[in-house]
Length: 446
Image 1: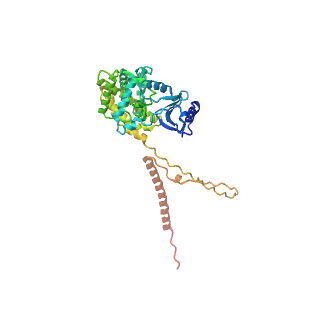
Image 2: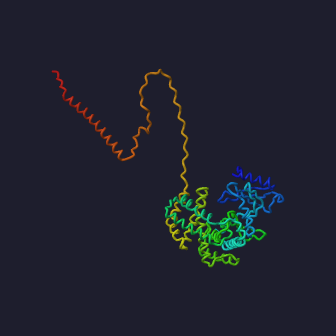
Image 3: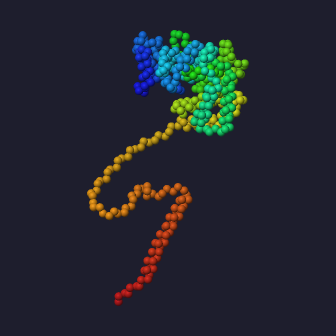
């Protein structure tokens, strides 16, 4: 597949000709939910003097122009480095062609380690420390980001009715149901705008946090990736992305403990943490409903538009987060009840429809060629005889009767024809008998 990849050939040419690097093997590293692709290039047996970065491997980003823009990634990389987050350091880039050569943070995602159940509190402690630095030390940097205001919030909320309810569940909403969505969306947008505004990664979860490989330098804390869509927005957004992860879940008691501890850390750093623990927890839960409604739409779109079916398995967990939060706040109770009645029951059926394999069609057998008829000797043309048209077996069969009424009419007609024939036969038989009785008997010779 890589041999015939035009973009990869262009990327290789950029490294060797434009940058003058000698490189080893290039392999696929990963892909995300966008058009971006990531490759890993190794130094291999190349002399370290001919290898620009001080590492054995690099990650290469391929962001096709017209579909992806590397400028936001480069901008946010610089801002997060200033805030103390460990993001991949950029060694070289070409904005016009959409190429970036960056630091390799390894292959180990947080998610793979968290699923083992080992060191969970340690991993989350380091991730929360990194998030606190981003939100507090990155507060000035957030001023240079676009606002996560009404327009993007509303656009994200509209993804659910279009892709999740319409395309995936095949629901046709009534005017009353659309009114419920409108009221809920307005409430969620207003609540988001009331929260303290900070640097928001927007996808701060276990698949975008990397367990860094051991080295001589201080590498404490996770490596942070996939941050190019950062905005300035609600303080609870990244926190709920991390602790109500769409790919792994924890008990409510454990999540609340992490949230309370994070609030204390922010308070010690001088951040705005609200008037009470209840208010901070409300920020956390309510912005979580907005995020997870958006994710329902995005995951459905990734399958129905982009053909990425793997995200359908995560839809039930995402929906469960929404249902749980709606039960906790009176403004969302009606919306939660509607989801349970109208949506929750349809999701398993919709997922089953999409994941069922279509029946395999048997390949059609090629018909054997018919032998050509032998040519007959030509004869003198005579008067043409009227011949009956040839009929095959199917044409000699009785016509298919579609309705009972038609069948009755056919039977009646057949009976009438049969009666007429039997009458004729009987008449002939009786005529023959009467003719025999009328004949005079022959006289016997004496």
